[in-house]
Length: 83
Image (cartoon, rainbow, N blue to C red; front, side, top):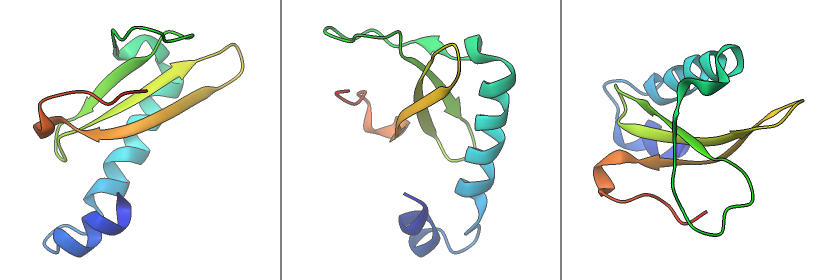
């Protein structure tokens, strides 16, 4: 995604990476930040949070020791990923 963003968003080539870094920082401090993503057959609770400037969702889960990012998915696609 980072490479695609840099190639196609020349006016703001660092925006995706900057917003993702900021969003991950917020998730680490406030893991319940995102809304629960409903999908059958998930073994863990997956949450998603929108990065408003790039219009991408970060899909993640939280364990006792780590935050696991499952994917970053474009919100304009109108549907969520299959995790």
